[in-house]
Length: 369
Image (cartoon, rainbow, N blue to C red; front, top):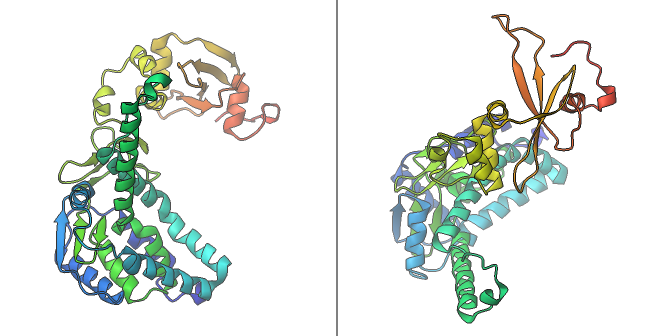
C-alpha cells in the first residue's frame, strides 16, 4: 500500500494531527479567515462578507440560535462535505477497499478515539445547555396532563432545533482523524488543503452564505493516558468564557465533583445514588482504604491471596483479590496489590488466574509475581 500513497508518511501525519487536535489557545485569526476564504473559493462560492469570532462553541451557538436564518443558507455541504467525498473517493480508487481500510487503521483510527469522544461530549453539553430535557414524571396520570405533554413537546422541538444548528458546524481541529488519513493518502485538493488550514487554527465553525461564525479553541485540555477527558481538580476542557466540561477518566461528572472527592467516607460513597459517580468515588478513595474503613469481610482466602467483595446499592458488587508481590521492594518490604476481578469470582485463586487470562484449574505459577 505504501508505494501508492502520495502524501506524507503515516507516522508524521498522525503526529501532526494529534498535535492539532490537542492545541489550545487563541487562533491566528488572519490565517484562519484566509483559509476559510480559500475554502469558499475552492467550492465555487463567493467569499463570505463577514467573520464573527466567539470565545467558545457555546457562545457561537447562542448567537446562531438567536438569529435563525440571519446569516444566509448553510454552505457546509459545498465547503466541507464535498471536499471530504472527493478525497475519500480518490483514496478508494487509488488503494481499493482493503488499502483504504489499512490506511484508516494506521492513521485515522489512531486519532478517532481521542478526537471523536471530546467532540461528542461538546455536542451533548451544548444540547443539554440550550434545550434541557424535562424532568421525568413517574406518575403516568400526571405525565398525561395537557400541560406536561405540551412541555415535553416543546422540549423535543427545542432539541431538534439545536441538533440542526449543530449539524451545520464543521468540527475544525476535531476533524483531525480524517485529515490525518487524507494527509497520508495525498488525495486531497485545494478545498481540502483550505479546510486543513482552518482546522489548524480553530475548533468549531459554522459556514453560511454571508457570514462565518468561528469558535476559538479551548484554553485548557486535560486527558489521561488513554486520551479520555480527565481532571480531578477542575474542568477537563475549558474555554475562555467559562464554558467547560468536567470529566473523570472520560466519564462526565458535575462541576462540583472535585470538591465532593475531598473528605470522602465509606458512608458518603454508599449514599451516592449515581452508580457511575459512586464507582469514581470508590476508585479515588482507594479500594484498600475502603475495605479497611468499611469493615468489609473477606469472601475467601488461600495461598494466592484474599478475595474481597464490596456490596454497592443498585449496582453490581466490586470484587477484588488482594495479592502480595513476592519480589521485595528495595527496602525489603513486599507490596500489596488489589486487583479487580469479575463479580462472579468465588475464590482468590480463580481471581488471580483471571488476571493472567487462564482458568483456575490451569493456574500453576512457579513463582508468584
